[in-house]
Image (cartoon, rainbow over all chains, first blue to last red; front, side, top):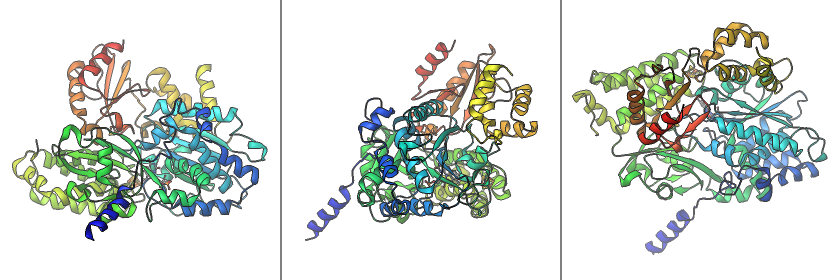
Amino acid sequence: MNEILDKNLNLEIKNKQLFNICLRTKHLKNSSSLETYKSIGGYEQIKKILKNKLDPQQLIDEIKISGLRGRGGAGFPTGIKWSFMPRDYDGIKYIVCNSDEGEPGTFKDRDIICHNPHQLIEGMLIGAYIMNAHVGYNYIHGEIWEEYVSFEKAIEEARKAGLLGKNIFGSGFNFELHAFHGYGAYICGEETALIESIEGKKGQPRYKPPFPATYGIYGKPTNVNNTETYASIPWIIENGGQAFMAHGVKNSGGTKIFSISGHVEKPGNYEIELGMPFEQLLNEAGGVWKGRKLKAVIPGGPSTPLVPADIIRGATLDYDGLAKIGSSVGAGSMIIMDDTTCMVTALKRLSYFFYEESCGQCTPCREGTGWVYRIISRIYQGQATHEDLDLLTDVSKKISGRTICALGDSAATPVLSFIKHFRDEFEVFIKNGKKLVN
Amino acid sequence: MIEKLKKLIDKEVAKYPTDKKQSAVIAALAIMQHHRGWLSQDDISDVAVYLDMPEIAVLEVATFYNMFDLKPVGKYKLSICTNISCMLRDADQIVDHLKKTLKIDFNEISKDGKFCLKESECMGACEGAPLLTVNNQKMYEHLDVKKVDQLLKDLK
Ligand SMILES: Cc1cc2nc3c(=O)[nH]c(=O)nc-3n(C[C@H](O)[C@H](O)[C@H](O)COP(=O)(O)O)c2cc1C
Ligand code: SF4
Ligand code: FES
């Protein structure tokens, strides 16, 4: 009896596969071209919507049914977010795509821009129709230059084909889309910093409320979504919310791209059905680098807590599955660490990142991130005392929850989770002034 | 400001409402920097005049975003990512090799004026770790010591 139960259980879990929705053109020839996207039914959804003037509320309901949650990190339900935009406001409104991925370990939006830009454009068109906006921007991370250029080309191609601009499909609906190129500031991924940046200013986050849906670019209602979020929309409209939901599990509808990097044989993007067991994905990525032993994993990028190998081994990759083990999906930026990894060195680098990228507006973040980095450097140089370890935890906890934007919390997360799980490594460093790991 | 650059900036300005030229300031600075290799005080002033902005507002932007260089960077600026995913793939070895070969530290220019080395944060391309960019535009991925040597040779 138990065996049958186990088998059924396994079946349910094993059932999850790699499945491409956002990356569905990646393996086709000329993946980024309009022709390729059209060959898989591209732009048919927006055509259907515009020709039949489909009811925006019904479309929002479909997206709600799909269970799609924002893929930029916070996981907010997209259907609900879109209903916050004041549809009847008759002034100018904006929609923005956030392709500023700069959190270490994140490189999924790059693949969408590079291989499936038209699906993203169609997703934005559908969003624009639903929210009744006529201008959009795609904010692209500064360091990926060639991708920016190729996205500009995709926009041009769509414009020439009448898919962007005035009177699209003869429906009277207008939508203009522009690419915006960032220039090296992680904080601009935060949606209000991104808005400031589009206004031509330093990327410093705004106080919320007011939220962008009421006060965004130039003070106009603005909706910001992640690249992967928008790129999921055409498939959902084509196949229905239920079908998308069915690819995932409860509370985690659909597929999600996991970007796997670090100590793994085949680093890269893997679009999985949510709910896939961690072990299965690790196998897909060829296992741990050079056949070494797994030590720990950061499941969703450094703003999500680090998890030791024995804890993540039994976990499934979905919002609840990762919450259960004290971490989170984040942006799906999975960083694999093998048993040669020194946790003090790794944390030192991450702390430097948050210190370097803090925009400096809030005292706890500006001072705290510097303080944290200095303490870890002291540990690293063998000049710390045992009190420093408690001080480190204390300072981190005092940054968390006391700042304008979530970068402050993100900075505290690695410190707290690294020390929680690998305290002994820090203590050995303090005592002997050298690494426990070679 | 020369005509060619004005034209490029105009294309960026056209993306925004007519009274919001300031939105094009990052793009304008990027265009100027690409032309000279770095941003001089004159470039900052020119952009300020062209976009109707106070000079200090332009300077603020130029200092906030990491890819801008307010000092000369040699003919080739090599920006290498040392963040976690690249670190795990031994970016430090590439850094050491570059420093030794070029006989410079981060933020220095080699004696022949050709290379400058910059430490960079995550470039959103960790799949190809370790990696670097040349003059912000061209990315070289999956680096090892041999590839780096070849690259230095190719950059004439
Ligand atoms: C410091 C910081 C960096 C962020 N970086 C990104 C990013 O690179 N890309 C992104 O989509 N969202 C990022 N976010 C989240 C955005 O603020 C926003 O929630 C998201 O773009 C909304 O889109 P979604 O609902 O589709 O996820 C960041 C947030 C913070 C606090
Ligand atoms: S938390 Fe940090 S990054 Fe965010 S607004 Fe405050 S100082 Fe800036
Ligand atoms: S950590 Fe180096 S590119 Fe992301």
